[in-house]
Image 1 (tube, protein in one colour):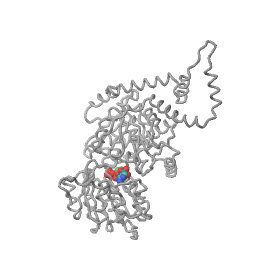
Image 2: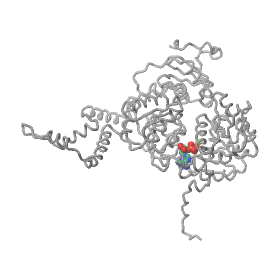
Image 3: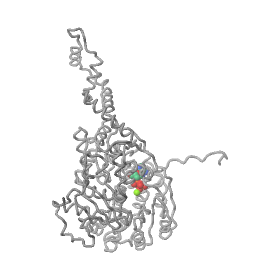
Image 4: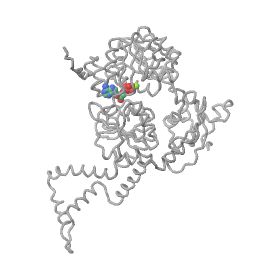
Length: 601
Ligand code: ADP
Ligand code: MG
């Protein structure tokens, strides 16, 4: 019975308990600190649990992985024989990074399902371990369409027993040219299977896939504002590159957060930042991909139990890291992809706690920030990084806060005696002022020695004024750099971030097997060279992108191992296959003639 003027009752908040998940899955959700399902989860999970197909239109950061990952695990048959590649669930994701991310997430949902194994498969990694794992038996494969096709063709993977098929980021997958592979994969999958298709957008090509391969799907679309990370206070600060470390130290010195994760773009930067923090007395550790699993677990445990406060990591190294204590996420480098941003920020605000995220944005990176804001449909609030003065004030307040307890504890005779001596009138009749003496003691206690501290504060204010005026030397150089001709891109750090004067990067020209036709972008190339190759920004000079290939100047000699790693790295879904450029592509020298590293200059 409703009165005509009554407004709709507000929907009661759904909880995970309302979704009646199998106990082991509910337990995993609890462990992860998820309390309420996101809107897409609230709609998709019941539909999938009831056996329906679904299409889900949702932006990045809306919690799609759990939306399909949980029902997918619920659908597994624990008794079935999954050896020799007869998997029960297949998730297709467009890129290696996403495949790894999703595999990690599904694995965390499966934490209390003993015997369930999740295998990520993607190009660029050796086949043999993947084939071995498939032969021994995994229930869930998460892979890029290309590598999944390879395994199907090699007979190491079979889809005749697949009960659950997921297309994650379907629009991205088609954009990357995987339409044909996706069709073939559907063609091989068992007919009695459930399908979930997720996409940020629903263009006709995706609609056609859904019409052809899905069975009367439930259609779920969630509003653009339903990001899982909206609970986190998201802020950014404009910080020129060379001030990042100092700014980070001050942010940490004034933060109230229990624990903090600092994200950098490259492994090298993570190491550098970790060392810089430890040098300045911060309890920090770095985990990079190189850290052995045991060591990594130790570090995570220390972060969890409070014996470590700051963790510095790259996106890859931080995969699968769930620690409730994290109150602050600092993006020391703003991530290249909005997806990575959402993932980083999602590390905080767990288990009903409040979380804060702060991204350092260099003056010329405002465009990247806009791109992230557009994707997550939220605006980040600009904040100022704390000044040296703020740090002193914070420390002083903290110390003053402990004074009452210290007074209460008593036994101050030693100090009152010394003080009364110190405050006694001198021969000339003057006496130090007690308040001034207390102030000096406080200054000493916070490490403010006067002149040097003042100089640091003035330097900071001058630098802030320049940033606000928008006319730092760095930004002016950036503007000039931008007019350099259309197809020549310089890596930002080489020119724009003012790390001293750099001669035009020459070094050796390398040729890589991705170009405009594949959709290669300079930032992707730089990303692969810095991430997989371990190069510094400054090692990379001019990048010329052509139709089917690109040429890159690298100043640092590359050893064989580095060449191999870079060669296997993916940009725009293709391996880089890096080689020294010989000028005439059709007469490319065989691999063995590669110029020795020491002759590179
Ligand atoms: P999408 O695939 O839609 O971009 P993800 O599934 O990767 O989003 O989730 C984004 C972030 O939100 C992740 O860090 C994830 O752990 C977190 N998350 C997902 N669902 C919830 C939830 N119900 N409560 C809290 N955090 C969640
Ligand atoms: Mg996702």
